Length: 101
Figure 1: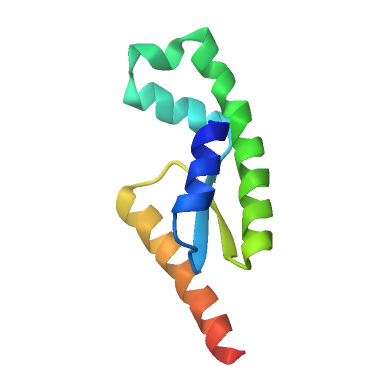
Figure 2: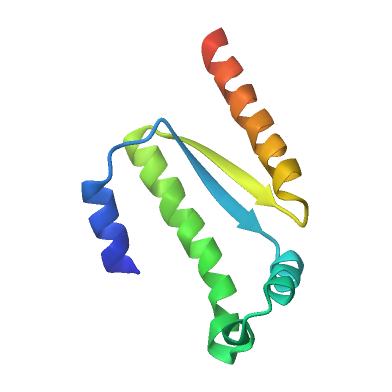
């Protein structure tokens, strides 16, 4: 994971905005249940939830270092359409704030 992050940091172009999708543990478990993949119930896989906080911290550092706007999007249990509209609203709000400056 660290190697991938280092390569991405060097190779990927700088973004204007990074959207980090965050989810709480109970919603994550519910989504895994709906997805119903055998590997999702693996004990080692279940430990992966904790990596979310490390990924968020790394993302925050990168955005601060490069001057990139960061939006932390709280994912929840909802339809794709509702989630898309919620994200669209957040992005439009950020754009409107930039235009005012």
